[in-house]
Length: 206
Image (cartoon, rainbow, N blue to C red):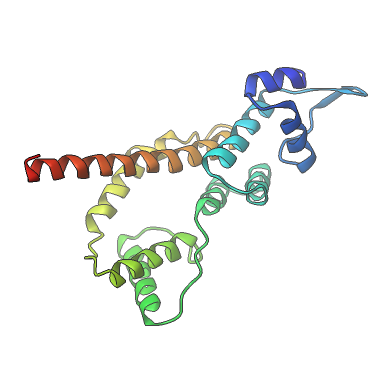
């Protein structure tokens, strides 16, 4: 297909496609003339992935480049490739000084060990959860993660992980991971808030 067709099918404007080509986010098309190239389904998949990372994951171009590099590096196992995408979605958390942080981080590491979960020692999610525990402790909130752990485990192992096409194109696997992580997470948060409103109304008799 020509670039105009690629634009029409993907919903991405031609100037934006040209920008992605210049930045190396989108592979060059097959050159069939001095000023004409042909594109195929792999370019459509890549554009879907870029849009997912940009619009849903809200990642900057530099982070998108790192994810794309992992997708294109066939020597990287699928698990490592998906991990790079997952970590790109995590907010940057700077470890804090003091005993509160050390206690929270030790609690997170202990929880992961007790669960037998295989989490990289440098996973940003460790610090993200530690920071959350610090804030909860500072605000006097009770910390009982057990029901949340079980809910997360069931959602991922019984439902979400099966939405990722591990045996398909690498672009498609990362796209499914990003969309699922962000959008299912957002839907779950909304459902919790709906449940809060309903339960409050039930208990208050409103």
